[in-house]
Image (cartoon, helix red, strand yellow):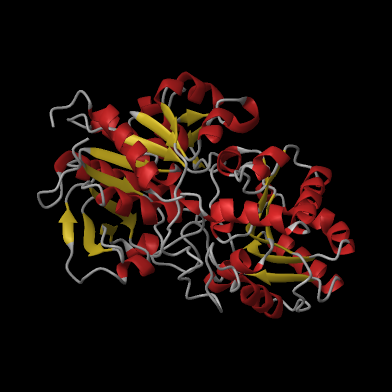
Length: 486
């Protein structure tokens, strides 16, 4: 590729403006990595209050956007220099709560309309251009942008290729079939060879059926979703489209996640001088009400309180971890019942289990730096970012062998430790027994300074940058554009 492509990323999240998980991190970093190659990557996003805060007062009117009529757009620039196009529709996007749910955690009843608008605007920009700029490729992310290729298919006059990335197949955007024509698609689109999925109108099914290429965020996850256990009902379609399905591991922001320069830590450190890590451990223990003890192994995690993340397995092994002199540090939020449960667990083990409910960037960094090992026993994990952060911070992760965790963590088998390749501890079954066995392996390695040093150094020296991932995305763009005259 000559670096001259123009790519429009269509997304409902983009860090640091709005983020609920890995999707926001990816779209916050990938366009910038692409621009470093000479690619003109831009982002289209709903105009939430946090997004409108970075754009100027001028508005562009995009006329006659299907059933949505005239739509106002605002232009701005993300902190890392990526141009952003915001849909200025405050009646849809400026409201209390998150991007998908209200302040009580209930999904907005008009989510189908809110995100159909996102896909419709993307397709119109792809077709018509915007102020002289027209993308060669549209890159739609997750179900929220899933109608983009459907609109391009059904009323596009030109073939503008669309790449769709699955960040998490569990979230599919399923709505009443009555909405198909309401959002501007023809009734014929509601078909098993189209947007219909078990009697519902599925935005993600639309994305996977109509996209020119599909990517997901790790090779192992790409394999898993073509099988019944991981396919969430879409395994047949994904298997059928396997020739257009690519697994590309996410990168991480190496500037934001670097223990040698991290301003959120009480002391910085590096692979050549780990002395500052102890200061983070002590600060983490103080912040979560743990006994401040350098000799107590700290097992930490940052996660959403959902079944996917396997925190129920962590809760089950806590008595055994504490019996071995360890402490547990948890930062997370999600299901209200689970939040209450974790408050109760912390109260039951004062000074030994610390829980912070909510998301706080400083606490997330403290967990990565101050823990001795990082717990990530996910039942499924498309890619995961925290296992990469923890390796970079000299905090070996303990992970289940699934999705991106399998692709990014090298298990500490004796031979791998001896040759300096091991970076963490990997187990197979989503059971408390298998998790505890890996925790015991980690504790044994921690008691062996030579082995632990080899594991932490190997992790800190790995390249998790976006450079290689961006190169692979460019190859996908090249493939879908191969027959087009650029």
